[in-house]
Length: 166
Image (spheres, helix red, strand yellow):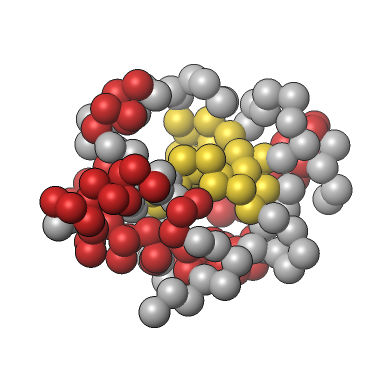
């Protein structure tokens, strides 16, 4: 049962990829991962504010085309990139403390938009991606691990820089 009222599976995966995965029988695990991501996003979504999924599940070809890592969690529907004008940092903190998130990245340099770009993944214990908080410049693969307070400060700085209501 889908428990993320403001999100649809189609926001995380293309229709073509969904049909392909159903045909080859890999759809259950990926759909379950996507559902878990949607539930996490539902928790950090601020009422009356929109979260746009810019990248969810990626097949290998698409992942290579966008320059994704060879072991990207996007390949298993375990990660998504999204933009939002605002998120609920209190709920994010609860997810972080309870090890319900893998990676959470705030991109510090925005490309002339009124939203902030984020990355969220499910925990992946084999890759030691559990409760990892980072900030990074958009388009630059230089990630800096930070603590939760720095994540909040970074979000506020970026919001002020792009003129998003704080």
